[in-house]
Image (cartoon, rainbow, N blue to C red):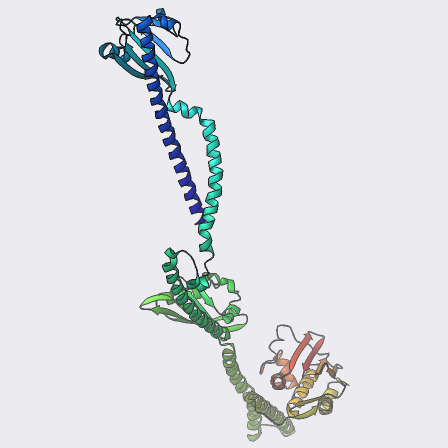
Length: 548
């Protein structure tokens, strides 16, 4: 606005200056031209009187560089000229001022040069002797006058520009200053031009309304952001072109993107054909649902279209983490299948042996062997059922009796029980460390140490070693069980704590394991809010560390 005011003032100043200059120049030119005409006529009258009294000799004694006198005879012949040779001058009988003088006694004319830079004024009068006396004077045209005045005009324009720039800048600043000092937070209190007071009042009302609406919008936006940020489910809003309008933190984590994806096409985030088809279906008014895997987790995506007054506004995508549900379902199916298989195997062996004994098909010397087989399979079946019961109790997360337990004491009990099994396999059991007291369930802690030590013996090599270390460090009780056994392959290490999972099924069958020992360990450690760490290498052994 300041520039526009400044430019307007400058244009007005130059327009006024130019108009004033042209008007003044034209007026002055005509004024001096008229004065010169009158002076020329007076000069002619004076000279004609002198010639009428004394004759043409009056001109011969006349000396003037300003005026030119010429005497023309009745036939148009130039008799005398004060500035030129009469012989070289042609007949002047047809000149306008000469014709008028012969006819009317007086005559005048003006002739402009071919270059339009100069004009000559002629005045003529009839003498008593019948001849005509003409006087002439050269005069610059207005264009020549302006051209000669160019330096002066340039100086005037330069000075005018400087003054106009200064005044325009000052005036524009002065005009703008009250406007720039308007306090929009307190519009009614402003003291400014009364012409804009109605506008300021209207702006103030609109400003108050907008401020109120913005506050409401901000509050709702904060509520919305807090709600979607606190959601565990991923939430994504797309417009009717598939461009991301909003994406909460859960969704950003699922699709491994940052907040800067807002405003971009969602297909830049997920280019899968299934996602593209689902978005296309939702934009056409259909709802879609499918599952995806991201970062080792499984998610269910629900896509629904958003409408308002029958117009499609966009798509909302909800991502639900169903990893635990899917994992639990798979575990349930696997557990059911495994339990069925694990229970069926010893039962079939027991039934087979019993049937042979019942039908008398076993020789007397083999009877003890078949009875021993029935006993072993029944013991295995009981151990399996007991392990299943323990896992069920741990899954139910019931609150058994908690007490102060010494981990070193339990470890010594476990090693005493397993001493016979270790001796049979020529495995050396050693216990190191100090007394560590923790609050827990004695039975669960015993199961943890028993299963870890039992596995370390079962899957050890002959003449191997099992080292149990109990120590206190930084207010943590740490139990580590190390063996020199067969080790666990890296691809199996993530699954060994699953129920019935066996790295080497044939070897596990030989050792008599149920496949539930490490699963019981994992659940019992979780019950005590502990943490497990596994280090193992094929052929070099395994170390399992538990931190309480």
